Image (cartoon, rainbow, N blue to C red; front, side, top):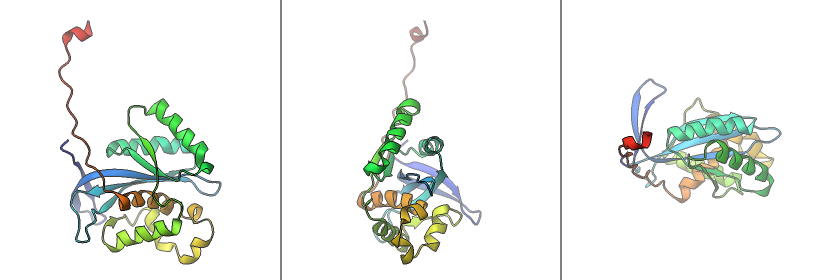
Length: 205
């Protein structure tokens, strides 16, 4: 690897495109009594656009009511894109989920290097929506029309922000965490991996 992630994506029109990514990050919205847990992975392109932003591409999303099931799927998707950072709401009311994730990580993905990070601006859902819309307006956020988050963004209104939008619009909630991370800092390209050297025959005796 030379510091870039290379992916091939087939567009909704059937056209194949190759993307070069600086890196990828994940946003995770914890579950509630009325909404599932949701995660989304965003990749950041190597080349910036005219606004100075490095555009973002929705790579994967997923949702599950059971956190353990979601952790498995999320970790698999993150491994595919060399993603390590998960941005979340770090509030005390979600502490049990934080503990649950850390137990999962130590038990099943100890070598994958996954880390929970406090999401920038996690206290304000409305500010997160504003940031997402700014990235879209600047043509710096590409989201599939088939995705959950696209359809939630299409239907949300100012009136929806008055009562528990984090639960009603759980996909937007997860996306605002990770877009907020890119708003404050760009991805550092993955470090070069040194291939393992030859194994001595004595190691097998």
